[in-house]
Image (cartoon, rainbow, N blue to C red):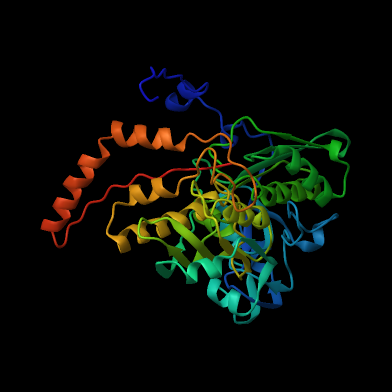
Length: 440
């Protein structure tokens, strides 16, 4: 299967990428009288705004104007599916990095310098930051979801072997090549042209129109290339497009907002981090008889896309393995942190991360190679081919692929060398593993 000839095909833009000729949003020639924007944001995780003094901001060099929640003619929300993502706040602080205002100046450096001069009197409150605390206090952006198949508790109890444990999968910043950026240019008849580094230009159009309280067809969004997105510009880019549009409408001038890398990482969400607790029952060959898992993710302050992401984590908890009896509960935790969002895999990797750790722990407990436990639990062709969400696995070639890869990678021999090395070295260790993927 793996002996077929491989033909390399160049990416359409590869030459422009490596020679620096590719035009990204920040490379677009700037129109005359362009102003640069910067965002002033909260530096605490939770609290109330008592008083804001913008006098030093407005007096700062190069500043033309500022905008706050009061300047929004339409809706103060850029939530993609569910509401809860205000552009600006002037009362409650719900997370570190929450935007409060934006300033327009003659250069980005002057705009950012001015934004730092704001004086805000706050009443700080105790935030919910951890997944465990959110679960304990029942702080959720969506109701918990339960999925059951068979009788997990009964089959775990009567299993020959049992294991319990907990684990974490961490978050991850998208760290795209080009950061969040938007340029809005006023057109005739109160229309606006927006250049945005976004994965979702059509929804950018709709959200900006709602924010400006205008018809959709008055907003045009252009995207040539986004300089990397990985999910981080699917919804998170809306905020920056909205801010430039509000400023452009108020000042009747072109506005550019290029977010500095550190501000980008503060203002935008990441891959959802997860906490898991599990109980698994299995036989002496490693075949899983029953599995109970609690999955809880840090969603942040608003829903964003967390419902679908957490659903996909549930649907990938089996990865490529048939689990006859399973009991899952998924908590979508609301925390006083920036809302996490789409990231490559969209919840799938978090589900697979959990079961693969369980497989490794089963192998370690039984003192057998983990790849053998994986093979024992694979979905089969004519039996053991129904998932825990009652879908039949039809396009199943995992056995052939896995066998081919073990052979072509010389996996068995390499594992023996690694095991021998680790026995002789108490400090320095090496490792090698082979894992399957079911994604869809």
